[in-house]
Amino acid sequence: MPLLGVNIDHVATIRQARRGNEPDPVHAAVLAELGGADAITVHLREDRRHIQDRDVRILRDTVRVRLNLEMAVSDEITRFALQTRPDQATLVPERREEITTEGGLDVITHEQRVRQCVDQLQGAGILVSLFIDPDVAQVQKARELGVEAVELHTGAYADARGKSSVDREFERLREAGMFACSQGLILNLGHGLNYQNVTRVAQIHGVHELNIGHSIVSQAVLVGFERAVREMKLLVAG
Ligand code: PXP
Image (cartoon, rainbow, N blue to C red):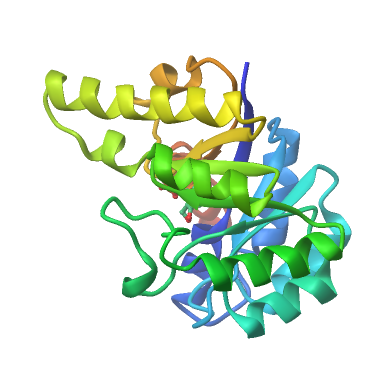
């Protein structure tokens, strides 16, 4: 049974819509842990569009499960990671030119930069995962780079429409996943997974962890909305 990493970026997206202090992703992390999250994931983007430096610093102190920092292969963010020391860093693309066809980090084209970043992070005792396409050549390069884990991009599977397309994308995940396991890599999956499409990928042999964000935050807004309105109604009614 795979573990669940909960990505709380979009709690911060809602906060940043007003540049205020609610909802606080730190609070969401506590609730995610109470709900059974095995890891808390945040992406500190170079433009700071959702998660802020302060969030990661506080989460580093408060998260009791693993803290997984998604990050670009950038000097500035790498320095931040080396100071903050998350348990795990997942290298993801942020710029158009770093992306492969499906949207994973192209670790073949950017081998040198990725290697430098991986070495620095591993030198600080941080476990490194690479977010790549479900492509054997990318997995092979990840293996050569000496990382502990890969996260295969499930976006093409999640976006596929019609049984034959879904089956084809699922097979790509399964085959690349099998290859990753055969190479001794920890196998994680993520992006675009939701309450409808998760069950099938959760059954892929050897999957260690699924990283899910947007659909959990979306569901939380809906399942929590009625209660939130009732609580406000009581206050308004006096
Ligand atoms: N894994 C990685 C590497 C990601 O970049 C993201 C999106 O931030 C996710 C998983 C979660 O994707 P989603 O929000 O679609 O569940």
